[in-house]
Length: 424
Image 1: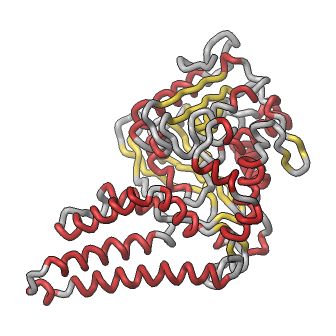
Image 2 (image 1 turned 60 degrees about the vertical axis):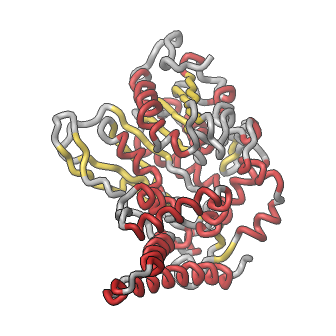
Image 3 (image 1 turned 120 degrees about the horizontal axis):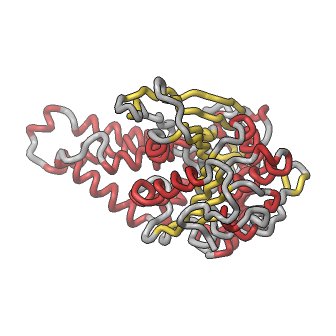
């Protein structure tokens, strides 16, 4: 699998399907075809439209698409997406709401590096912007990064988070979503050891694999079943000639997308079949629910091979975070060094990616944090996506997180609960 020809073959297959869709759409759209009262022609046009759009999205980086935010004054304020700190493998991005009075809450949203762009958290950002000054980690597509920039594994990821937190200062509230939860915990511990006064005020971990063995899922079972050699042989490819990162070893986004969709093949098949029928009937629109979701879901990015393999080996197989045995650049990370950070755990009852209990495993590791500054929330009926971007996030979890931030804005008494969901 580790050949550029394999990567190029996969891209060729995607490109061919995009071309077939565009061809079918063009064929079915000829005015002359309207004279033939055959529903098959409408179906061909609809199939082509849905297919062309779907395969085109797989190589397109989505825009943030946040034009404005309503401020406390009731006026709409334009949002400027600015790069606060730039690095080869990822940037620290700031959403500058122009003309608005300074927000009381400063939030660093740590986006997952798991095959999708940081724009997967667009709705999360939009929901926080009216009340917070928001920053986010914007990870780069590995196929766009020249080999000369070197490696990027989970230790480098952790050091990036450390630099981002140092850049933003201690008056900060960190929210880590899914995959980066254990590494955000490790970066906070490193910062606490280097400069205890620079620790962020709060750390919210949402649906992350702190201890993958706490409640096994298909994802964690897969990590257990296969050997590292099998993963390297079957999942790793070299970037093809089309991109600046030619020759770089990566876990391709297209390959991961195929794996994700195969886990719920029946659901995705029905979604696309229904969309084709809606398009044929003239009921679909450019920004309908289907397109809104799949435009983001299908837009995938490559991860560096070393990041993917080290995540599986050290987080899932070795359980280094769960055992408090993680090391970065030869330094042992002691999570017990975290002392002044209020920590909140958020999990979804029906999360099939990071099941309940996996993220909650962080609290016993925080031996330096008083119980009054630890909190946990299990959202009933919520799946993985819902706990950070769906209805459960908007209606229930977001208000709890903001309340948690407000409660811990200033130094609080050790006897005062972090918030009403304080963990025992």
